[in-house]
Amino acid sequence: MAELLLIAVGAATVNNFVLVRFLGLCPLLGVGSRLDSAAGMSLATGFVLTVTAGLSYLLDHWVLLPLDLGYLRIISFILLIAGTVQLAELVIRRRHALLHRLLGMYLPLITTNCAVLGVALLNTGTAASLAEALATGLGAGLGFALVMLLFASLRERLESSEVPHAFRGPAIALVTAGMMSLAFLGFAGLIRV
Image 1 (cartoon, rainbow, N blue to C red):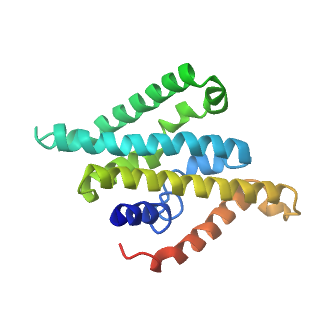
Image 2: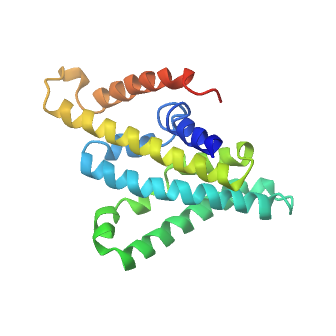
C-alpha cells in the first residue's frame, strides 16, 4: 500500500506530467485562465487519466502482448481514450446533469490531451501491476489538477496586475509555466524513483 502511495505522489510531484514531462500543456494554457474552468477540466481529466491508465494496462497485458500486437499500442490506446471519454460523457449526462453542464464542453477536449496518451504509454513499460497503473493514473490526475488550479490562480492574479506590455498574454503565461516547472523540480529529491 505504501508503494502505491509513493507511486501516486511521485506521479503528482516529481514526475508531474505537465511541468516535468511537458505533456498536457494545451489545456494548461487554454483553459487555465479561470479557476472555475480549470477546476472542471481538472476533475474530468483526472477521472479519464485514472480510468484510461487501468484500461490501457489491461488492454496491453491481456490483448496486445499475448497476441504479439505491440505495434498497435498507440492506435488502440487512442481508441480506448476516445471510448472512455465518450462513456464518461454519457454516464455523467444521464446521472448528474449539473456536473455535465459544468464539464460538458471540456470532456471532448480530453480526447486530444497528450497527457492521457502519455500516461497510457508510459504505464506499458513501468507499471508492474494493475494497481500500479491505477496509482500512476490517479497521481497524474492529481498532479494535473494541482498544476491547473495553481496556474489558474496565478493567471487570475496576473490579470489584475500591471504586467509590462511585452509580456502580456501568452508570454506571461509561458513565463509563469516555466517558473512553476522550476518549482516542481524542487520535488526531485523528495522521492527516489
